[in-house]
Image 1: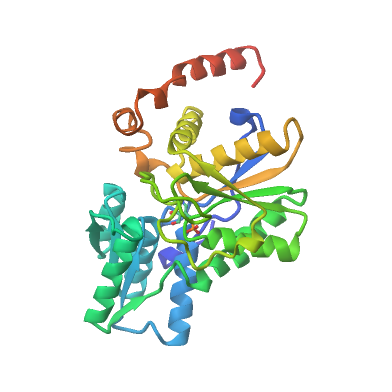
Image 2: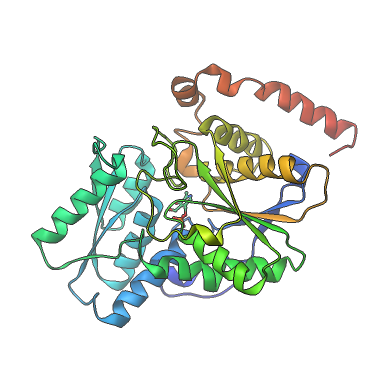
Length: 336
Ligand SMILES: Cc1ncc(COP(=O)(O)O)c(C=O)c1O
């Protein structure tokens, strides 16, 4: 284990969970939640901050301002505290309380948008406030995770090579799409270095990233109300859209195995399983999915029965106990 003096210096990049026991597929989950920010966003934040410092845009006295559904906000609040910058996070009402408290605990300020913009939804409204803040004071620096090439480069240099090295026989990579930084960085890496690997984007139903109408969504991380400028569709082999109910079911099923992952991990797993069932039924395909964060920030949503029933109806939880019975039966018969 390394000894560090600044929080951003540690990021577990080599941990994978084998999902075969839970889902019966040769699907591995790359865990990005083991670092002081608790999410994959530490990589993007670090790459964007270091590039802004190198170019002279970010200097002593600067105040970072960013629109984030939460995780980038936490990552930037860590970097700002570590390096001595101010930080203002513009988020919306879907951001969970624990995330906002984390940002504030590290000295950041949180603005929560409660009304979506007529054009662009919550993200549109968040970006309007970022613009207003920047116009009010020239100490504000907006890294703009939606268009900043360093967001994707962090994954081109870090995330994708770690997957490629661990899985020389990799056939499919499933990557969730938020800003599309992870997706574009990984997709570019595989196209340039391992062109035989299929890159499948996983998005939420109701996201406009790959077309289709904007619909209300509750789970932060994946999906957008404004198409991210980083996206270059030509690098992506296929796209799967996942309903939030399926996201919840995948998360809760893994939790019953002792793996508590964040909401978007449920989306990516659910999309991956559907894609594999459709395009590789019965085949022994080696696949990796990226898990952006862990589940403890979702205890009052994805893992809260009352919240799930209120938002999605009790049908969303139907089958949970049968599934458990099924699992214990499989265990006693030695199938698992
Ligand atoms: C929980 C979670 N899932 C998924 C993503 C999507 O990653 P990206 O913005 O690189 O597309 C993020 C990024 O903020 C996230 O925090």
